[in-house]
Length: 428
Image 1 (spheres, rainbow, N blue to C red):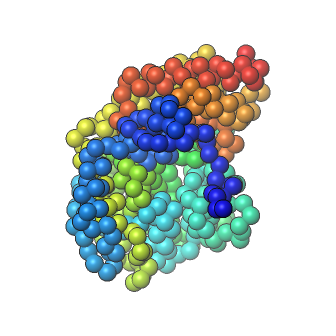
Image 2: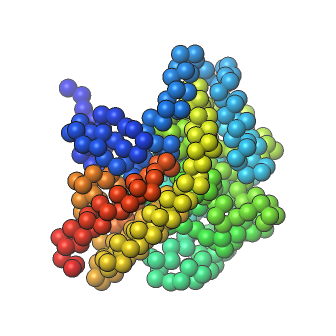
Image 3: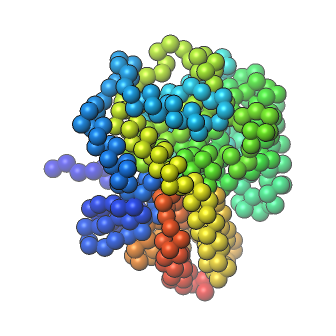
């Protein structure tokens, strides 16, 4: 009898029967607030009727038109629509299925375009589990342990994680940029460095936002040395942070040029259907070598139809604005809970991408209490996930359709869960 791999560990014991909006209905007859959104994927909620209708209609017309063999209208229409929301100048797209694939494609493009080998990634970043993307990932050793040697040409630089260092944000940024300069002097010559790759907010690494000074510093160094800047917006993109793209919190067109040379998107793009893409200027994308871009399932017709519907819903229901409004409410509520519990050492995030980091009385990371809080929340009907290198951070990523009432309900459950978890840990 076949069974799933024993290494597929579930964060909750819920067997989902159906999803509706912000809720999952379990086989146990309970309704759960889903503040995981499939790890940031179900951006318009579970089974949004507009997305369902678009997918159903497409399934009855064309399920798969392999896009290096034939072209299909959903792909062409989606490309046109993404052109309306992408940063100016990123006018060429290549589609795949997953974030990892898109990261690999971005690295391949950077190496082809520059003729250089090395990629600088940043400590705490998560870019995927495949061999190339895994080599860039340092959010935890579990994503790369036991499979070496990893892809060569990867160098890791510090990310300004102010809470971890115990420094003010400005000091953390100055340190990270100084160390990047030192790395370019001692480890990876600029003449050998193809690209920097960075998340505007660390995802698996603990929901740590970058800031304007850090990203401006990366752009300045990229320009100075002819290095490409790749923004991994797999989790932060498509409205998640209260801006359409996460980096827009830190960068505006009036800054004189776009921030990204290559932008990666996936997760919330198609409301749960597998779809990812990289976007770059046409002249840069043209430097990819012939045959280096393709794939059997990339740009699937049903996924593209779902993505078009997702973009419609995000626009028509003003979900980017809702993410900003409800994110402010959620972050404020999480800080109130933390104010009653010193075990919550830090609360941070942007939009509907919020996290609470747990620390013990000695200020050291406390993954046990974080895990207990996550499980106590699930027992009370609120589905959450942990993250961070040591698993001591609990994240909240509800669908962008979440209401104020649902945020308040989640916060009430969270307050109870934290109280129980902290008491169990004996922290008072």
